[in-house]
Amino acid sequence: MENIGLLPLDIVAIRHGETPGNVKSREYKNKGIDGYTEDFMKIPSVHWPLTERGLEQEGLAGEWIVRNFGADYFDRYYVSSLNRTIESAIAMNLRNAVWRIDDRLVERAHGDVEVLAPREYGEYDHVKMNLRAREVSPYFAKGPNGESFSDVVNNRITSWLGTLAREQVVSALAVAHGEWIGALQMKMEKISALDWPRIKKEDPMRSMWNGQIVHYTRTNPFTGEVSPSVSHWRTIRPWREAGRNKEIVAAAKGEDIWHERVSPTYTNDQLVELLAKRMVERSAEQPQD
Image (cartoon, rainbow, N blue to C red):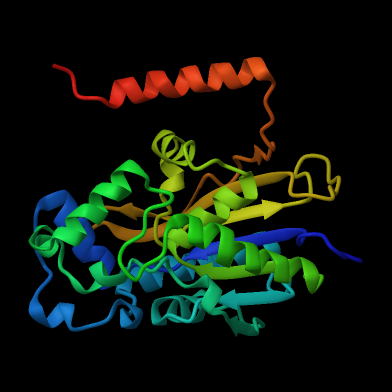
């Protein structure tokens, strides 16, 4: 099938499995446990391995891919150059995959802050200022020597999608990172900078768990009709926690929930309604006297 100038029929992105960094971050945010020891901080995040849970998550992601697409469906396999994504690709056990390592798929760079433990953020004025800037403008703000979310969307994602279209890729699978996949969602669904935080808040499946899958397609899943542009998408978490020990077992949350991709357009009156809605939301966020 010719695919000149079009995006692939299917684009699938999988987030890497759990790493020690994910564990430390979750414990710090949810339990106040500070596991950012001196020895841990000596390990650059690019070298974080997967935990046992992470390996299990990616194994289940690979099983879901084979079950839903077959072992030989994709004609292009991409993986970020960081260790945790490469280890995830291996753990998926897609036996006939031939992987392309691509730096455009690496996680968003947060710059100087990456060498600090969270407890140290308040010790540096420029870091405090940057964290405040991210609260005010999460899409455009960037840390010193880092990337903004806008940089990832408009530079790396746009470049990668352009490669897929230019090289007439029919189906592509990518093992990447949480914020990278968030940027892909913004680009594919034409979500605006101001709407993205609200959409993430309203839909827990946008949070991108480790091992979570996002699938975009030009094929209508209900009629089989092929569109010249992406028409539907879904996101799947192929695992769940079970028992008192929270063991990783197979699941497919979101598997059959398809969403139609609609490029938003507005009349003048609808723009007025949009601004009114944003003002109401902004007012609700402000502290009350």
